[in-house]
Length: 93
Image (cartoon, rainbow, N blue to C red; front, top):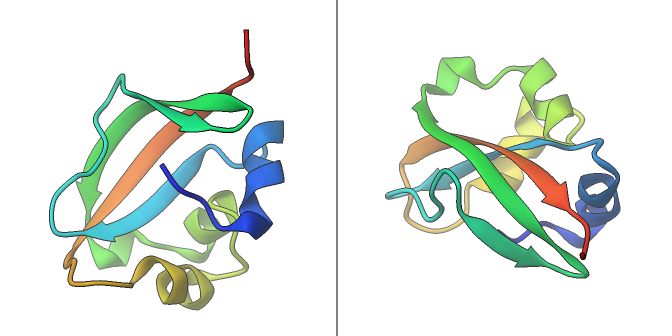
């Protein structure tokens, strides 16, 4: 999973443990491990959500000020489906 540079330290510290993505289909799977230097991201769950489920609270949990800021970042490309990814950062062994 890729994260904006401004979010990476907060992901590594555990402040951010979820992400909203707009994709055509899921690009990660529950239980999957994905590199994020210097450690990895473990995806705990992936579920499709409705636009109405994307609240300012969820945006803040994802590292953004509000829904508008989150969606401006999340909406890039041709995706139409909204996914909520819950994850944990795993530091290197």
